[in-house]
Image (tube, rainbow, N blue to C red):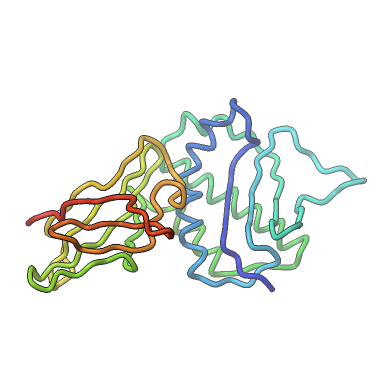
Length: 222
């Protein structure tokens, strides 16, 4: 059985629903980041929840789950357009409830459910404030300065940023500086995806898989 490693939720890919999918993006990215480390056995590698205002199953085609080429697509009858005018907390809670409905359908049709995924969905929907991921694998230690420099990915419904934290031996953040920012929710693998970090003369150089520098940032002092 494959591992579940990806997740999406949104309406059809039309101009009309682009803003809706943007509002759902913060919740989507938080679940995407959270699901991989759980190493969940599932009938598919990606769970895709599609919100369709006019979808109705028929006696001839009653199924709501389309499971093919590693993607479990769940069709929900729901008009997502009003989400544009809701506050972020309500959007997250609604997204969690819709995902739970999708998982109910998956359980009914494929006889599969995972309590760890259920818990992740609930916790993600209830989260207040910005979501954050600490990239510990890209941390760089400066033994002379007694500092560890750690990049942090942070996002909410209206922005994405990557900052560099300087942390002391107790792991407390003593200073920060911006690496990159955007005024929308971004998918990290297309926004900032370095594979290696090196301290060079007071700067952190981040390189991609081909060894090219994608960012060079002066270390924050504090």
